[in-house]
Amino acid sequence: MKRPWIVIACAAFIVTLAMGVRQSFGLFMPQMSVALDTGRENFGLSIAIANLVWGLAQPFVGALGDRYGAGRVVLVGTLLYVIGLVGAALASSALGLHLTFGFTIGLALAATTFVIVLGAVGRVVPPERRSLAFGIVTAGGSLGQFLVVPAAQLLLGEYGYHIALIVLAGLVGLMAVLAIGVAGKPAGAAGEGPRQSMKQALSEASTHRGYWLLNAGFFVCGFQLAFIATHFPAYLDDRGLGLEIGATALALIGLFNIFGSYLFGLSGDHWRKKYVLSGIYTMRAVVIGLFLFLPLTTFTALAFASAMGFLWLGTVPLTSGLVGQIFGVRYLSTLYGIVFLSHQVGSFFGAWTAGYVFDRTGSYDTAWTASILLSLFAALVHLPIRDAPVARLQTA
Figure 1 (cartoon, rainbow, N blue to C red):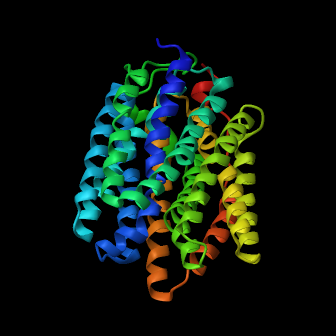
Figure 2: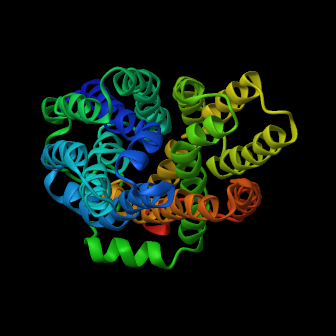
């Protein structure tokens, strides 16, 4: 068995590259939507397709990870990611964008992000340190956003989107080497109780009300993150702050989420995860409400990005940690993959409907209001979750 720190480090760097490049896509909207004459709705639809394909594929890709190990899955995902980025650089129509930025990269993200690598990490880390380990890996996605987004903006400004996408494809290719660190066929963890088949694990989860409440809450997370990541730079540009401020805002989201992911992951090892999750969603509603209430300036835009960044991906180590806590880690990638599907359905609506409404009304007000109301809904649905391990684990 590999040493836990090797698995954690490689998993974190894989997420750094995969999510860092993914979070830069919103910067490409103004330039690519004009060059390809697609409009914001069609560009947003490409991102929405990627999110939906990512989610739909995730349970199946997660099952492959649980069966064959994360290394092989990440390797295939890396190849798809490179193909998708190069294809997007060569696309000449909305359809080409949907097939590359949308479908291909959606599949790639399912194979190279949280669900796959957290499954590998969860099997080598003891339960009492698992939430913290998940937080460290999640913070990798934020580090990537902090480092990659400014670089992508620089490339866009200097060379245009074609060259920028090709360079990002080369960067993504590094994940093929990191896949070695998370490779290895999964084995059952100690204390997992009687051996289960995947069918039995799915049946067990499907009858647990808390599992469906986690799905509902993660839908909200997906809606908010996709809306902000895809449309916030353009929103600031429309309001006269410029795309550079949008890039800085996305970088600050990444920077502050490094701290948020770590601290919320750490908190999950000391406090009940469902209450921390409820608190995160409540704070998101407050932060968005304050941002809309206050006058829009460079300071308020960057302060909002910093505050949302702190709350950005703290839901990931807590939600995945709850799945592992309740059901064990043998099929964590599969069970969390289904929860992540709900997240990506939310992402589809967050990325697409905001663009749809904007193209018809010239405003993002409806999307902002929906984000606040959904936050309050998510804060409530986490409270009744029964978070004790299932009976199978209690008798192990």
